[in-house]
Image 1 (cartoon, helix red, strand yellow):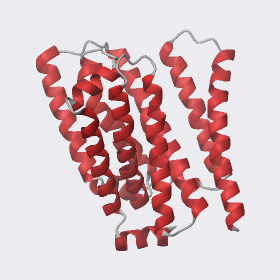
Image 2 (tube, helix red, strand yellow; image 1 turned 90 degrees about the vertical axis):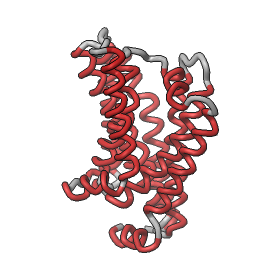
Image 3 (cartoon, rainbow, N blue to C red; image 1 turned 120 degrees about the vertical axis):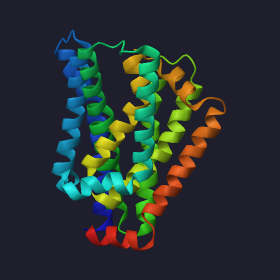
Image 4 (cartoon, rainbow, N blue to C red; image 1 turned 45 degrees about the vertical axis):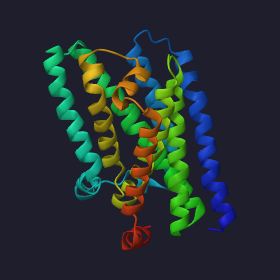
Length: 271
């Protein structure tokens, strides 16, 4: 395919899918009167996921949905740094939560719904959008050189950070949300490299979901809190912006290491 046609196809698909995601979910909810918050959010997320799935299929990129048990397991091995951090936070936060609260303040049914929404939102929607569509389509649009891959990774990661701007809504202190946007860019770059190495988006979805839950389990499930800005501030502590920059830089460095030399050649050959 000619470069110009490739750019029109993939960049056009990114723009069109974004427009559809902006208007169609809200339109659906306006026609269907949901009284249950969790049902409403679930439908909203499912509509977005549906738009993304159709976009991937129509553009002939069904490989995004490829799955194998080996590559799924590779996600947690190759992404060992994030796997270890996730396991650490999950274990320590559950331990301290039990000591502090005993049992979760969030009731059992709400916990299940909370986990479901986070898997649909952070796991499936964000990974399908940022790595499945944005990373894949930018990469297809710009070509098969390493520089093109890094540009695609960078753009998709910057956009991944930018979508967290919505967390400013209702935030009393915007600084922690700015910090979240900064470290999300770096983590997004790492997750982009991880997906390129494994070719298994499902592994990314699960690891992303577990990482988020590892940070939320104590304050949200056990503490039944929802003040995102305060929670991020408590997690990062003093020097929040500097720490978020450090997290972002380290994540980018690890991401670049994952696609180094021969590893990039293997990725490019598969493509």
